[in-house]
Amino acid sequence: MERVISVALEGVSKTFHRGGEEVCALDGVTLAVPAGQFCVVMGPSGSGKSTLLHLVAGIDAPTAGRVRVDGRDLATLSDDERTLMRRRRIGLVFQFFNLLPTLSALENASLPLQLDGVRRAEAERRARASLVELGLAERLEHRPHQLSGGQMQRVAIARALVSAPALLLADEPTGNLDSHSGEDVLRLLRETATARGHTVLMVTHDEHAARIGDRIVRLQDGRIVSDLSTARSASA
Ligand code: ADP
Ligand code: MG
Figure 1 (cartoon, rainbow, N blue to C red):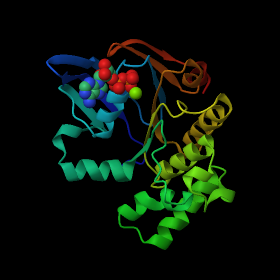
Figure 2 (figure 1 turned 180 degrees about the vertical axis):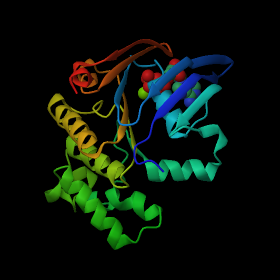
Figure 3 (figure 1 turned 120 degrees about the vertical axis):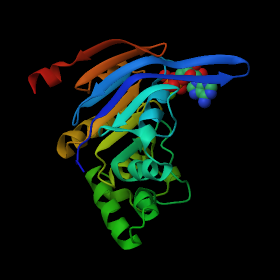
């Protein structure tokens, strides 16, 4: 099993049925993200960004085409295999943090490991290391409501990284933050990716956030309309 993994969408379409209407969220998307790349998909609201991430996470299935993670077509995996892949190899970060309000930062960050059967003491030891790496050493016992938005997102990133995922998926991670904490979160996403070497697929509607990637793919009405490597990757 590779520590760093690739993602590939091959002719992927996704159609939703709403009322009597068909909504085409993705329309023939082909995209290969090599292992270790920081790829940003940018597009306006409704362009299909969250749908794309859900397909890569195996939370939803495409109407047509193939989604490969680490070369494996997700449609050929059983539900259990997809769950295990998501739990052990993929980290997820969301716009609204999705922290459990009654749990401390440490408990929130250790939860994925505990759900995976890691004993509490060991899970908390690893969660503590992950929180410290993200600058939250002084916030371990705080509940989400005692934290700022930026701090909550850092806890969510610590939680996503606690299982040392090979792939990090981030959906508008700065969408609910002021520009200062947004900057902070972007810097941490970039630094942790560089330090750990995992693949990142981040979607955003924010031009400013997009520039931290090695590559910027633009999505419009469910189609890729441009695909550019950034100066960062050219000089790397
Ligand atoms: P983005 O994340 O770029 O804002 P989404 O992927 O959420 O875009 O949505 C793309 C399109 O698909 C939108 O028109 C949205 O309304 C539609 N859509 C997304 N999820 C569903 C769903 N579960 N049921 C019906 N329509 C959906
Ligand atoms: Mg979205």
